[in-house]
Length: 105
Ligand SMILES: [Zn+2]
Image 1 (cartoon, rainbow, N blue to C red):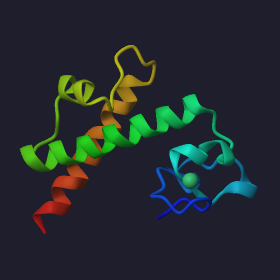
Image 2: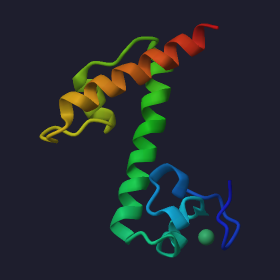
Image 3: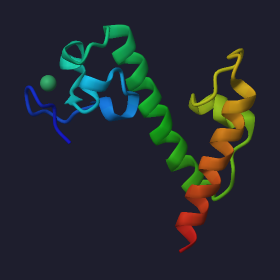
Image 4: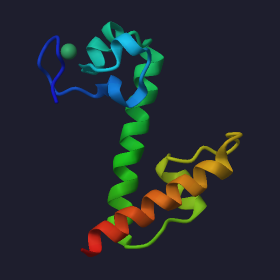
């Protein structure tokens, strides 16, 4: 999916974040994140999250097991001190199991 303004590969997909109903679909590169109604900080944090997610998937596939909490923190999908960290840990464990189950087929 490419940026709908300049055609470069898009990193921001509004379908993922649903900012508002009228902008529920849109694809933008980091340069045009502002067009999507995101501040540069929000755009950066989305990019970090996407990078962490990609790293997480690669790690699970390479190690073929659910990651420990420490490993998740190193990769960046879990943030220590985050009030929702226990819930996030469960969420990422489930994602890891899905990735592993999917890989076995
Ligand atoms: Zn663009």
